[in-house]
Image (cartoon, rainbow, N blue to C red; front, side, top):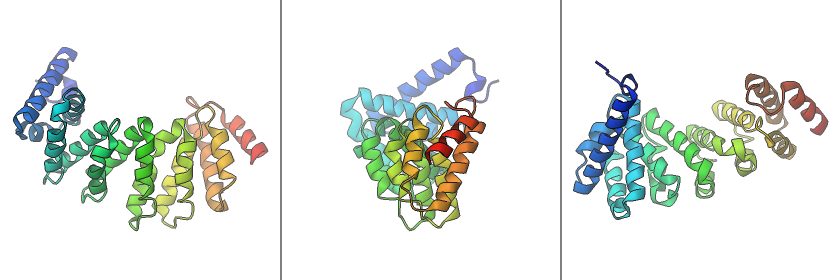
Length: 253
């Protein structure tokens, strides 16, 4: 007997998703959270994903239910189960792709969750929201760049990465504010992100031009080494070869 979502055949998976959608809608219609708890706390990641995608779908399709949806998610964001709290944040992240202001408070709280899973869901949500709804997300992220907790600074740095892979100019001003951060984990994440936003078409030129204005020369040197290395590690996805990237940097930096 299949025990996980992807052990089911496609037809069975499709039927399960339809059933989850119906039950989640019923939860919001009746203002009862039993189905939400059932799916949000499931051991199978893909069951939880199907549930939070259903939440967003219902939020978009049933405007009259939106206040209740937000309230019921809010009621679960302090649940004892970290999986439920994590799934709430993932649901909020889906909603925040179009309507960030209404879910911002979920991320303000989850950044400080005692468990790493909800905090990681914040990073993932910043990535997916920032990719398609960057303006409010980056404004929100900016206020945490110099937070006293190093993990908050690292999570924000990591979270804005995805937007930078296509539009590095959008996140480089925020990254620049971290160039003198003395915490090793933040510094490593910053260097990693600079590498990740430099290998797609047109991005290397933007990143190198910006790095020329940075003051922390050691950090810049580490970033350039990472950028050159990324062009080899991701050679199947990079616009330039490693030698071409190296040559461009040498002639333009």
